[in-house]
Length: 154
Image (cartoon, rainbow, N blue to C red; front, side):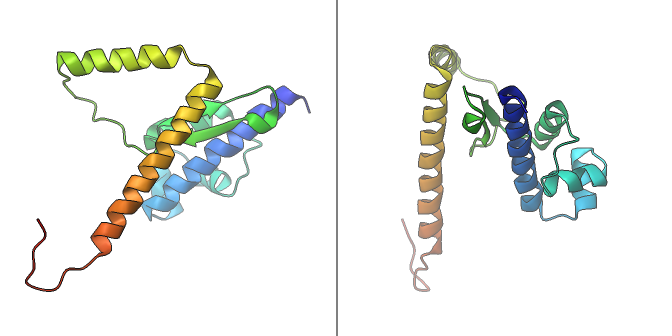
């Protein structure tokens, strides 16, 4: 097997893994999750069980889009550098009206990202996800603290 086909196989495996994680989080049966993702249940079963050999990367990406997964694909010089990474943040709703200053900030950010190498973008992406994860965990800890009855937090 060539390095190129090994890289594509690694990407298929990672994208399928992210879809499987998503469907597990739905808490639905495979049949119901398959309906949500508009795929036959046997295809979803293959994805969930990591049997991606007969599935195209394009099909897996289409399913990830249907799931609303914000995903970054990483390739490299060797197959071991390949991977699919899901952003922890949720996408904006489709109809968002940005102020001029916010739109300018987004444009500037996108331009800056285009000037980075793929490795630099991946590093920033992973750092962002780590910080977001730490932020969510801190929020869970705060929510888990119970105040005595009759007291209020400010």
